Length: 269
Ligand SMILES: NC(=O)c1ccc[n+]([C@@H]2O[C@H](COP(=O)([O-])OP(=O)(O)OC[C@H]3O[C@@H](n4cnc5c(N)ncnc54)[C@H](OP(=O)(O)O)[C@@H]3O)[C@@H](O)[C@H]2O)c1
Image (cartoon, rainbow, N blue to C red; front, side):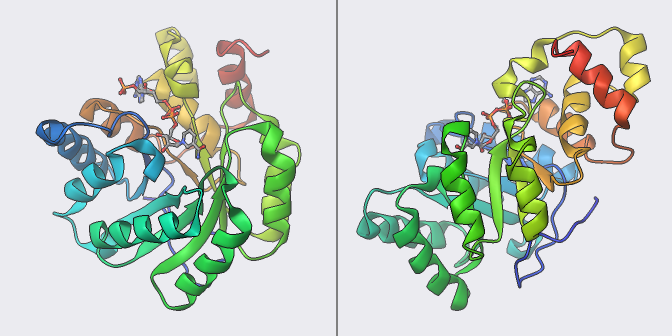
């Protein structure tokens, strides 16, 4: 497992490079909990330690907490979010989140920047008293990157979460350079473009040139090869995919020629 310091946080959360996303895939009925347990077990066995969720993802946080219950709390990194229109609702959800995740959240992200000024003041207090270790901000849309930049420049957050894959590279222009300048942690969401890019079928020779066993691994390595990115969080409901994705975090990553080949295969060159 590779480790990199997680942004400017005073809590030096060491992070693995492959995390696990939970949007859609972990919003399951209680009787399907064994599926979530199997995905988490495969991810952890493969070296994944960071798990990303949100109140926006239906039952995903609760299902994730149940799946993580068998692991020592200090061996996993819980990155979840606050996503409420009112402060009262955010705090009520926070009580549930603390109960699910052992009394502290490693990275609490302001999802889609909803109510960020008020949430940030509150989360700074939660960080000061240890209920939250690091604060982040997320947005999926380039239309919100001006506002995301404003939040980053406050100097009050530790990390951001933004989309990055060969089809979504807008963050390369301003957001990633600013994150690097400010020393912020960067989590790359949608590294497989919601699965669209995973459907491409390169030849065995092309996979060999990329040094990977599978095409999704090449895509994950493409995202992680950007030195300004700390974690990629592919989502899956398939334990075999979770294991294969976790393996993409091991060295070597891709050189410039290999990155160009991934872009060509993804149809952007
Ligand atoms: N903050 C935000 O606004 C925001 C927005 C979007 C996403 N996110 C976060 O980022 C995470 C990842 O983004 P995402 O879920 O949108 O998309 P993604 O991770 O790019 O793609 C997920 C899709 O890829 C497939 N997949 C995963 N591994 C695979 C493999 N090895 N081989 C083939 N297919 C594979 C999955 O299907 P299978 O189940 O069949 O594997 C799933 O359909 C989310 O889960 C969420 O945690 C945050």
